[in-house]
View 1: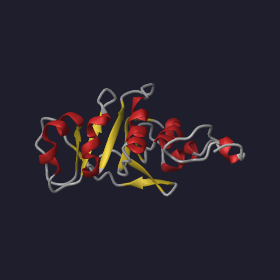
View 2: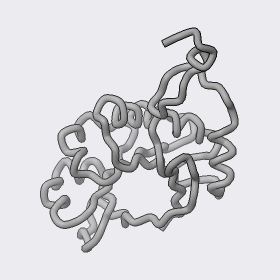
View 3: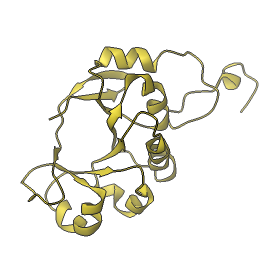
Length: 167
């Protein structure tokens, strides 16, 4: 299983990867699993019975299609197939801000510590680092800048609010 870094109460730390990835053509074992978006759309009801479930969403798949089932999904793993593909950021913000999703939003694939600040601001709270980085590395990257300049899913106050000039 891949190494997992979790963000809880502002602290990055190692965590157990509780969800076992299962391919689309594999039988689903007992216990908590991660399935593809495609498999979830086809077999969701059967997969949800008696287990915690994570759904892996690729960048070209509409996270909006999960909206009605989010309350039953324990985690959503958003894929970064390569460093320059940022569509998962939008999916994370949609999950947190539009749909009020409170479960785990995990970055998988090419998740690099240089992206930590932006991932946290968009609502990610779990990371499978692709670069061998540690929780300390992620904490340093996420805390690199004291000020932010717009509102986001992390609820940090923008600089203009900190100055007392805005609402």
